[in-house]
Structures are given as C-alpha cells and as structure tokens.
Image (cartoon, rainbow, N blue to C red; front, side, top):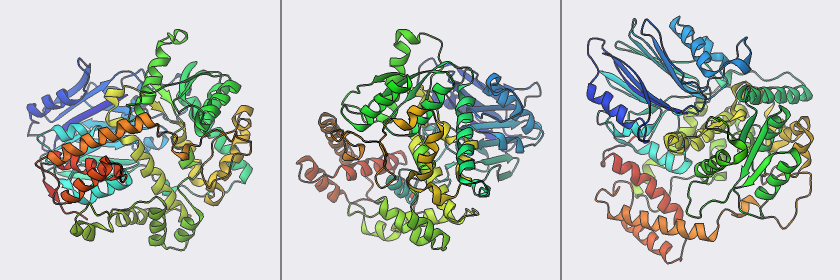
Length: 587
C-alpha cells in the first residue's frame, strides 16, 4: 500500500519550486506523523508513503542518482523461485532494465502497480502503470513541468495545477461511474492507460505501450486444454501472491469468485480467515458460511453500522481489524486482503451478451454500443439538465465508447467489446478505493486480475465464455467443496445445479436495502441536497436549479424516489465547486 507524487522540470536549467515540493509533502498522506520517503534534486522531486502491505518499500536510488519507485506489486515472471522473491527484487530487475532502455522487461509483470523512473544523466522522467491500468496514475503537464500523483486529490489541492471542469468527461463519469480513455473530470489532468509508458525529457514527450490486450491471439487449444490451462494459471496467480504466507484473510461471498480464491488458498495449505457482511438469511450470507464450513475456513459474519454508505471499503476495513484483533491471529501480518473481484466480469462475461458480440462481428459497433447502454440503463438525459446540455452532449457516452472500440483490434472483433467492459468497469470500481487508501490502509490481492491468467481468458473463444458457461466447467478442476456447495448465480446466466433453499433472499432483490440504513441514507442525501442548493456556485451552466429543488421536495415527502438525481447532482456539484465554476465545453 503506498501513494506517490512528484514534480519534474522539463528544463534541466530551471529548478522546481520548493513550495510545490513542500505542498506535496504536506498532501501525500492524511495520517498524522506518516513516515515519508523522498528523492530530490534541482530538477526532480518525488515523495512516497508506504505502510508495508508488501513488506518492502520498493524505493530505489543508485549511486549515479538514477531512481525508481513503485506502488502496488509488479509480480514479475522470471527464472527465479517466486516464493523467495519480493517486490524489492522485482523493482531491482525492472530498474536495471529501464536504465538500459529495456522496456520489454515489463512484459513479464503480472500484478497491479504504478512506477516512476528518473535518469538525471539524460534528464528523463518515465511514468508507467500495470497491464490493466487499474491502479490510478494521474499527471498534468505544461511547457515547464510535469506534476504526477497516484491520488487525484493531491493534484486537486496543488495551486500550480489549474482546475477546469471537463463537461463531457463529468457527464460520462456521473453516468458510467468511470472515466473513458485517459480523461478525468478536469481538463488537462490525465490518467495513464493500461500498459502505457509516458516519457518526458527536455522539450519532448513520448507515449508507448509495453502491452496490448488486443494483440493476444485466439487459443488453438481444445476446450479441456483451455480449462486446464486456466486452472493452472489461476493456481499460479494465487501462489505467487501467497508466497510463504501460511495465514491469511479473504472476503467470502455466496458467489463463485471468492470461493475459487479460497479453494486454491486452502489447497496450498494456508489457514484462511473468511468474512461476510451480507444481511442475515440471504444467499450471500448463508451459502458463504456453508462453503467456509465445508472447506475448513475460520469464518465470521461481520455486522456493519447502519450508517455506512461505502460497504466495499469500510466492510473490508472492519473485517481486517477483527481479524488482527482475534487471539488466534496475533502474528506479524501485512495489511493486505484477498478478494474475488474481477472473476464474474472476466471469466463469467457478465456484461457481454450474444447480441453484442454478433453486432461486433458484423462491424455494427454503434448497435453494440446502443444495446449495452440500454441494458445498463446508461443515459446522459434527464430533465434536471439544461436542454442545451442535453442537446450538445446526448451522444457523449456513445462517442466515448466508440473512440475506445475504434482503437482496439482483436483477432475476434467481439473481444474488443469485452476488453472495453473489463478494463473500464473494473477501473471504475477501484478508483475511489485507491484514492483513499491512506485512510483505509488496506491493500488487496486480486488474483482474477493476474495478467498471466487474464491472458488465457482473452485467448479463449468468447462464445464458450458467455453466461458463466466455461466458468461452471472450470469449477470441476477445483477441490470438491468449491463445486459441491450451492452458490448464488447471476440473473440470466447458467443457474447453480444444486438446490438452494427457497426462503433465502437473493442479492438482486435489494436485500442490502436495510430499512435503518436506507432511512439514514435518505437523511444524508437530503442534507447534501440542502448544501448544494445553498452554494453560491451552483452549476447553473449544466443543471436547472428549480427542477432540482422540486425533485428534492418530492423525495423528502416520499412522493417519488429521486435519490438517483441527488447522487448525480452531488457528483457534478463536487467537481464544479473544486473548479470554482471554470469549465470547458469539450466533446
């Protein structure tokens, strides 16, 4: 777990401002008395905080002043004993390759990470990220300098970085919950893309990719060979993250993804603490407990405060604290937890359908995009927006997705759409989590996003993967409890073959809408709505204030559910305020 930020002068004869370095040091963490590592010379400064999720700091400075640092974990595949390696050794290998201009060394990374490399002799700064682009890495540049950070909040607070709202991007983000391509909510602040390398030197900028998922060839294996290959790669993905750890903790739902992780962990001999914070008498809760008992985990149901909005982050944090405080786990444990995220979207192809892949193969991209947007109920429209905004930006979602699809060139065109969904949907899920990782102080092992494993998914025939078809066959290669205990399945996908008690509530029946929590969330929304309406800089350019006021009234009286509208306005208003009403009509 770490956060990194810095500044680079594009002219070696012009030193970087000391005030900017001081601001970065102040903003790098919101925890008091945080230990901060730093590197500085007249042209370059970087600060990094790391509390030891991966035990080693991954901060390298050579005698020639060449420098490399990273967040996350690269997990290089090299001819060494993986159990004995760590991310410090990975950084050493990468650093030596980068000094020689060897960027192909990155093709062997399997983990999720961001990295910075600086060579004072050639006056060159390099920024890069993992093959998924999952861990955020932002940058802003002008003719004088480059400022970068793995947390957007740092760039937001720096006065040197101008904040101007990107209208097209904010409309995409408040609808899709993720930004498209390299855009952020701000004009000029960009985010690195999957497998991207940015290089800055005196008056020069270069953009390259060390990895492209659309270049993975289709598999020629038989179905059984593919299944066995997928299983061996997944087992290797878990093993390379587990290393010599014998006691660990994993989130466990009533679905398939997390139980696959636990199944391999147990098969590798680990003692596994599992937790679930779903409401009682639900498939998610009951089936998770049944599986944990059968496979031999130490399982616990975590009860969350009803006044909790972010179940994803706070639930994991509470579970971790409970794990550490238990008498049986009083051992030196780095703050990192296992999760099954990415499994059903990747191997299960949850958001990919037969009509969409048919459109893609027939080169009818626009029809594929429209179908996806309709099925996901994604639309920029809404009477709370001003008519001119709707008229100008009604196509902003479609155009943004089309731009991404036009840049992909898989051997099977249907895979282009899968890659768009997989890479961007997952990025949307984790962006906020990594933004606040200095608060949650807990990193994640996500083996379903292991690059070597995901490569085998991309190579598999997409028709076999739809609706969890290949996934269900894959289960048979796991230890027996993985496929013998019933699981919660997705609507419209292949059902679980085992009987499930009919009295158990289903996740898609809104079981997380606990009355006490919903009442608190309503009051919290109304409080935020009042704050939005009181602001002098209400986003009048985008939204109709009188319509918003009426919607809030109807929501407060219980006449109509306008929770979605308040959430959208809170999102837009937050960024509008940070930009002090400065905006650009982008497309």
